[in-house]
Length: 499
Image (cartoon, rainbow, N blue to C red; front, side):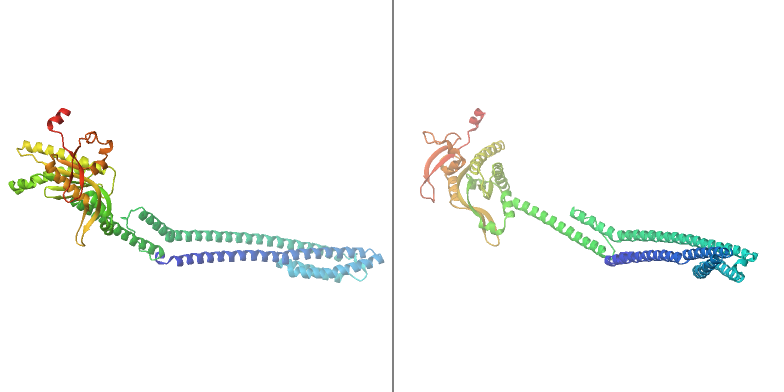
């Protein structure tokens, strides 16, 4: 039932209950103190007063008897003084007995005091004016003894009443203490019960919410939290359940987005070099369109006599032939960090130092060209075993500034490089057809790769590395001549001898 009550009402009810119990306990405490005060006042007003005045009356009776005895001695002077003392004690006796009777707490005491008063009246009647003859009357002596005995009994009755009253007060005080103790224990038990109820209905649900928050913070979203409570803790748990479900949906959506992004990158890698695909995926369309101007290495390659060969092959054989050649190109590019920009039939264009500039890109371009020639030589050996003719290729390498970026329209974009460096590399590849070497590189490419760091020998040839200077030549479509360098793989016999 308490699960449906708001927490503020629970706290208000608990505090009100505690205050009510405290008020009841306080009332009992005040009542106990009041009762003790009443007993103290009553003790002073009745038992103590009755004892005091009874004893005072007792003293006055003794004084009266003594005065009567002195007066009976027959001395006129002493008799007159004794008679005066007797009358004074007699008057004070009446006052003390009256007060003691009013303050008496029992009928027995009042009865004793009445007996004393009656005996005193009888005694007054027996005493004649001539005091000297009075003492000879035995009735007076007997009556005086009775008066003294009765007043002594009255004093003892007053003391007994006082002791009884004190014992009764002690019993009432003990009962009050016991009642107070019971009330205190009841207050403590009710307080513990209220605390237990508050813990069960407030603290436990809040602890459950804390554990749920820690679980969600730890990324564990599979545990559901259902709560039918209608108080604030139930609302909190239901809100956290909604949050958990939304986070679970968000995580699932993010996971799907990651999978889609991974799939997109894989798809890009199928059609583009992985480096280019990652660059396109990591940058905005604006950055991709803006591109950058940087120095890169360009490698062009082409199969000699491909048109004539294509005419003699059926489509299946032609496809296999082109596929094997492109496999050689792709293997060399991958081995040396090159990016295949495009295949155009039997030709290929490779880039080095894209999409980000890097050291050693020029050396990688030259090494890739040399590796490609060696792979084609190995391919030719396999073809010879199959009874197929050899394949010859030409490779041109140049180094220089280009524009790198995506070009195209709003419908289709293509990553490529643009600039005179591209044209020069293509012209160098064309020069291999007549230069007698399968690989031609520009002086800029060799210089960027560090091949010319040792300078040229006396014949104008590079120091080592297998490169040799070719006659400078003016390339088609360019003004001025260029210094060209050629490279050719060693003949099989030479490689065997060198090995």
